[in-house]
Image (cartoon, rainbow, N blue to C red; front, top):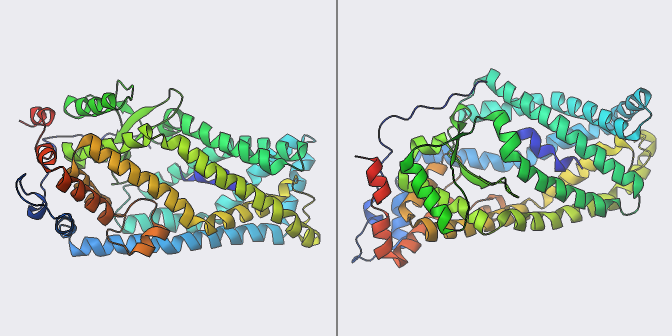
Length: 444
């Protein structure tokens, strides 16, 4: 059950970076910048783009991303050990007993247990979290946070997990108590509902806790984005900016939300570091997620996996509980003391299906890539963005590595897709890779 809200925990006074001077200018390498009457070889153009990344930066990017492969394993091992210690030492049962002494309400007991559980897991895993989330990020030049500011961010994430997790735990254990035989079906449905609710409230409630959104007023950026939105049936009247530069150097944007909470947002790193063509390419991609209904398709696809996950837990929990009942002192699936066991089983399940999870996301990202190319018609802007993303994503993995570990298409795949699009749409693409009327008016 903890898998449904553990992601929330990964979520100072903000100051927006001041933009001065013109935006960066898009400059395609010669092999990718041929005229409309010349033949463009997508493979050669891709290699030309890849060659623009200095060897030292490529080595750093490869090392960072490949290290992330091992982190998938070690994150599972670290959390798994913590859960097993909670069970094996009887600490989980003692936390349950403490909650029972404080109140007779089963719902409040589950909430109190959750609070104790989250505090213990957070404190015990803090050294690992510091190394992985702060030291490692800083060593690769990806974080802009001081250690104090990083701790503040973690405290905010802890508070969110505490509140939202308490609501989820209370609801799930209520379902288990009332529906002891079919709890896994209704629990999975509730989990899917929580996922959707999170997608609705995140842009409006959670984002402002970490950053300060503001409406972007720069017409040279806003006008092309809103034009793209209208062309694709997105009813947006504003573009929002968040001050992500206080946390990292990573460029990002999204069209998030649902049920009227939709919002077009890009971060100040993208505005400060990217050309107008790159910004349009990125926003075309993000609009693709919205127009292609990836939020709802993702809920369906991941929802199926959640149902299977609950079924796996239901099948294994009781067997393990009965086998180690004397040591663990877990009474039933409805006992909050069994949360570490349920969390361990969920963690194991999602660890095993990591390649499948990545493939689902990577497929959606590729669909959005193609949509963005057809919408923004900025293939070189898209290729340049892929180079910038190489700061933390390996550019040229092998096919097996990409299939297992990549939740986005690799940089090489994205650049080749853009160059193939350009080769097949040369007259339009050549016009699109020169400053547009809106771009030109903003760069005298």
